[in-house]
Length: 342
Image (cartoon, rainbow, N blue to C red; front, side):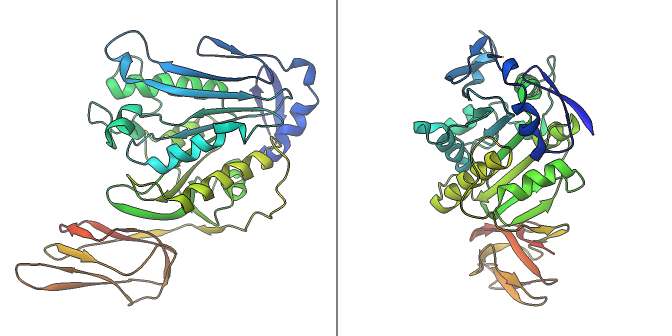
């Protein structure tokens, strides 16, 4: 058991499922949320800019923040998308959560930052303007690099307000991912959040140092990362699955009525393996798709050197589930081609 402070309410909580119940008994204390110099009253929705400050550096963090506050008390669910600017599925998932008022919480608060790395989103770049990976910079520093400053400003607000965090991503660097959740399976509250999302596949992974998910978990905020699809492409199926997952989590937290459709059970994967090109590189082709079950020794794809006409056959080293893969392209030696979970 741990004691947490939520919206000014002290609450002893065993898990996320009990959070809304504890808060529901404290309706008299449910007031305005103070964030980024604005006051958001119960029942109010506010859209505001997140500005680092009136300076040259500050202009690079001019992104939208949407706060949807219910008239009834409950947890604050934070949703972030576009930390990598080229991973645009997450931006649209976050957008659909608040657009048109279709996902209004009946209790608690939604805090949505749809395009965290707004510079990267505008330019189609994974990175910030200084070529650093924002998702290796959390919790940031008030006296560090450009990336550190942005990470610090963002994480200060997230740490102050979030009771749970959903971070939305896709595959990276011309790779596509099976819809999946990643979190620390050793954290019961985070695992509950992952199972509630309902995508069916949950991977063990706290994340590398500097990752937003890891930084949140380190300060006691249950956080999960949703991955689906490939960068620089909107995939309607993956987007709809992500929106459904967010709504499932809201129902789990007591922020919305339970869904009439049961949440599918999750397949927990504790170990994964990357398969890389080992020859000289060349043209990578494959007819496999994420979600395929593969057997040890099966052919997954080929890499052909167009100069020597030699072909490397890529085979599965073990039985498992194909959770991610490179899209057909030109690759060099060492490039990660397939990601298998077992």
